[in-house]
Image 1 (cartoon, helix red, strand yellow):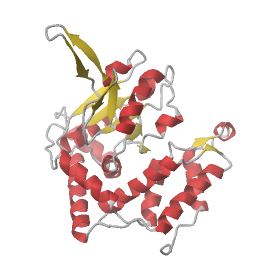
Image 2 (cartoon, one colour):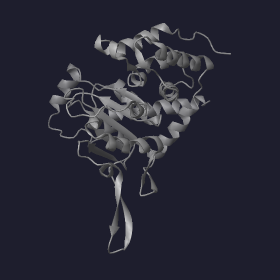
Image 3 (cartoon, rainbow, N blue to C red):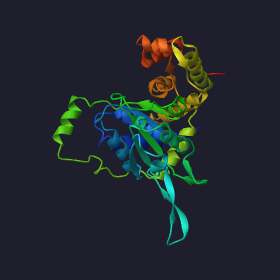
Image 4 (cartoon, rainbow, N blue to C red):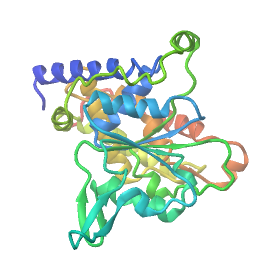
Length: 321
């Protein structure tokens, strides 16, 4: 378990990072906290949102905050796997083959409209998201640490898109949306319309090494057996729900606990409480639950089902044995 001093440092540093990112992403503190929690939990984020809501700005702001690099890959039907991972080219003047890294080699990678690429190109992300490396011509190349993919999907204009398979969706730690800013944030953005790039003024507040240190501290946050049992019961309830075809997997449960640990540490606690689990239920479960055809036909949403799952499972009120 982390010490009170370590927990206090984690919470202060997390808030410093969140405030820094919020200079560019106005009026979205909850989304910023979710994105940072995802990064410190060593996971990847899926954003399903409309164009022009600030997805690229979010990625660039996080990258600038942790003194890292960022890249943006625009996914299109003709994009090849080598366009993402890189390629080995024969250098004639050196008479050797050299690897030329692709845009996946960055601290924060924005995979824009990922569902527009072919399944073959989508699958090129599977190894790097899970293992943190790409293999080209039998040689493994590490993408470094920290590493985070922020992928986006456009909820409109679905013609010509390739739906992400459940196996790949499960590799995203969270799914959320930024949404349009509120009235005050919109007015502030319009008043500052002369600024073309809101991330240009953001300066790093931590280094990549601190990110790794914070991730290690989050792993030490205490999770009571009663909380673990609560997560397990939520998973079981999701699998036997009448409208659910595919529920929360074991990998999803592990991701859930990792996120809850980081969320608790960011809140200044060295232990997880049931509210941490409840606050993360939608971003962690929404892309891992697949409704059956009848439920979809009847207009039932994943959000409604998740609410029913949470209501059916009583949270713990005392510590486990």
